[in-house]
Length: 176
Image (cartoon, rainbow, N blue to C red):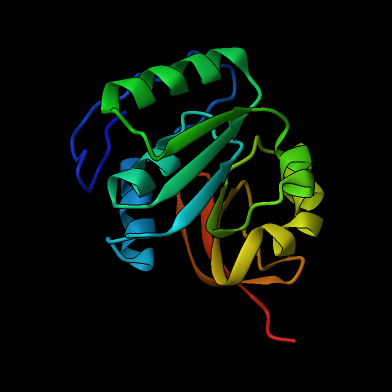
């Protein structure tokens, strides 16, 4: 898997052999970071359901102050640690744990959150009640899903695309 932009552009990362792991394709990541802006200097991001961690590593490559990767699978965690070490990614924090529990209990807040959970298991609906507490006002969500997502709790889609069977969305909080 290749990082497509920023200071680590073109660096290759190893992907763990984990059933169901779907690395976000290069073209989708290019689109996402065009939407967000290539420069994420000073932002704090959270990659729940990190898997390969490619979304978090892409954000770190573009200047985020911190990126927290949350993953529960031991094989995926091992690959995340190896990638962070190879990149000397000191701004990347790797947390072993349940994504929903992390969202529910962390005292931290973030400028942006990446959500790319396993498909057809209801993870988006499970994490939705906790999104307002972890995303700062004015922040954003990036969501990948097996179907188009118009709303997720108080969040609505402002930009979306599709690549094969992947539906991807940039979401903002609805104004009350």
